[in-house]
Amino acid sequence: MKKTLPETPPRPAFAWKLLFVLLIFGFSQTATTAQPQRRGNIWYFGWNNGLDFTHGRPVKTTNARVNSIEGITTLCNEQGEVLFYSNGGGTAGFMYNDLELGRIWNRNRDILFDLDIVSGGGLSAAQGAMALPSPANPQQYYLFTIGQYSSLVLSLGRDLSYFVIDMNANGGLGQVVSEETPVFAPAVECLTAARHSNGRDYWILTIDLTNNDLLAVPVTDQGVLAPIRHTRQLNHFPVILKTSPDSRFLFDGQVLYRFNAATSAITPAAILPGVFNYSFSFSPQSRYLFAVSNALPHFLTRYDLQAADIAGSLDTIAELGNGLIRQMQIGPDGSLYFPEYLFSNPSVEVSIVHCPDNPEPTVERSAFTFPIISSWERFNALNNLADFWFDDLQLMLETDTSEQLLCPGVLLSLEPEGVGDLYEWSTGATTRSIVVAEAGEYRVSVSNGCFHGVETILVRSGTTPAARIAHAQVTEFCAALPLTMTAASDNADRFLWSTGDTTASISIFQGGDFRVTATNACGEATAEVSWPTVHCCRIYAPNVFSPNQDGINDVFRLEPFRCPIANFRLQVFSRWGGLVFETTDPEQGWDGRSGNQFLPSGHYLWQAMYQLETDPPGQVRQEKGGVSLMK
Image (tube, rainbow, N blue to C red; front, side, top):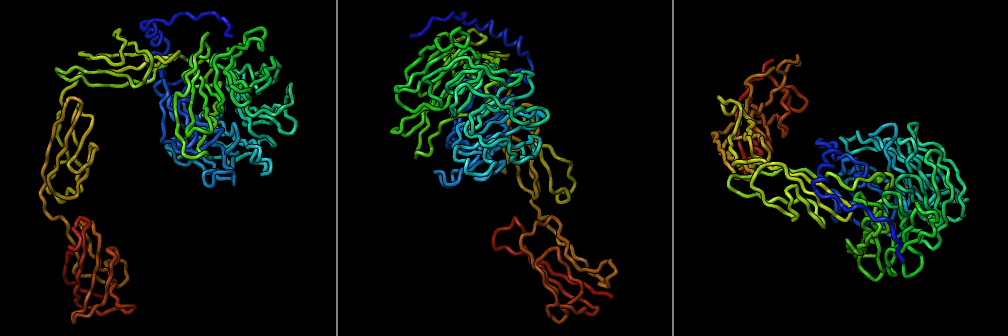
């Protein structure tokens, strides 16, 4: 039975929302895009799967480079750009053969660090990895990893450990500057975090497998400190731990605790029986705890943390059936996400709880379908993020700014990048797309449930581009090579050269006709230039040398000019036609010897045969001459 809760005020009109955005976020692009909740902007999980929240409503991606079944973590910066992600570690002989290797990947989806099967945690750890910025250095990050149950038979390093990643290194792609550092053993499966009450430090939370105590590891500007131990009310081992975004509550699957963010002390608040200890989450505003019931059929339930009797505030939200309901996670759009599947279905479905802090949240089952080929492609978690990133979550964010050209005499159709249930334009239109005839700034609120993404489209007047080719003054063409030519245009946004290049500037090494096309949304223009097709390659050869080992003119060597040589052979003959020297290296010269014997002074003949890199196959060029050897 649903309980009656206070109604929320009606959603404001777009004009008020637009004013709100302008007042709160201002006009700075940096101010509008830097938000803690964007730390969870991109999720990678499963077998090359992902969700992208860039424009509000997530979009499914299938081009990630990842393999995971449970506790993977993906961390972004506060502009929503991926920093790195990791499946936490590999497990030898687990079930997936070569797919069970642990990795840390960079934002380009290349391997940043190879955990293999010897570093980090375990591939089957429920909350196997979590990343946090260092309180002492915002460009350095801790990656915490934890093992699965089977890690107890492995080394100490497979329990709770951490790595340090410096994002200033490797051109901003990051580098592990401190490899695996053990923190505590035995600890497996559970790994979450809470923000310290000072707003700067963190608590890493896990469970001591020996006696089931809660371990709170301080992460401060002094580094990762020794764990603080707390006795829990019920002596059971949880699979996952969750803290509320405001770091005031902790839930272990059976007992809800009040959490002291200054000391990490815990105080029991309620025992919540019948909860499936693998799937639960707090709401973004920390008002509610959502949990899946353990018995079949499963039900999605909700507890009010502001109620005098929290256990008695149980509210049934939806029936979920008999499938396997997996780990629940807050998204940056303020919704809750969880994977679910039946073993008989060749897919994993991701379902959504919309508006979890509202009086009447709604559940969208199977919002995303990820087909699987084999059972090892099933995944049980989406992104093990610290939920404090979603404290004070903004339900209205600037999500994108773009520019478009309005061409003379042509109406322009505008459409936001994001997809939603409701669209409200600054013009008053409520359709997904609008048609405009004037330049200016157009804004649209794209609504998905309780989340509103505001996009700005800057429309400026455009004209067909002009084009010309600029280059340095040329008096003698061969002497000017290689010659840089630049497409000059005030209003083009892309270029295409007759060489196939798409950059604004190109370099040429020979003559010919060259053309560039400058293009924008209003049209295109072409510029051309012609250069003489003369043969600029020259082979310069000295006519005398003196190999007396005085360091001056001791070697006879050919000097190519403007000759990109591919194949080369130099031969030197005596006056009677005998071969005295031969080389295929253009850099090697003749020092006046035949074998190890210096030859007498006199006149010698030389012949060079070569191909240029631009020559067709089979074409061979030949140069001949004479040189005097003097002593």
